[in-house]
Image (tube, rainbow, N blue to C red; front, side):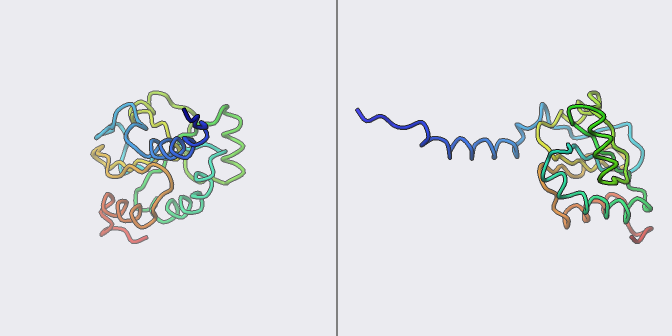
Length: 156
């Protein structure tokens, strides 16, 4: 009998782990509607130590500058270990939109995403128009925001 090293299974395990973070298993449940927020809102679940979260900050700042005058609300939900780390991160990175710390009822409304970054774009009726796990696709994000805002009345 030939003994197989457990390391041979490591690549398959790592691939399965990566794919699971991008699947619907990354949620307790997949919400279709999230009510109780005014207008069109982009929710960003993030942490200070997340590489993708930090890499997308310039885009998120640009989106905020361009679309907040048109009515887009942006809310960051920070999942750092403590609130002081969150405050230091927001200040150091000069994040221009509201960032809140570990809001469990809000996280539950979104199916308690287990991957970061995770993004939700919610229209004024509470319908989830976009759900993105991982790095944002700028073209898709802009397109979805413009549809949700009905950009005909506002030109960023």
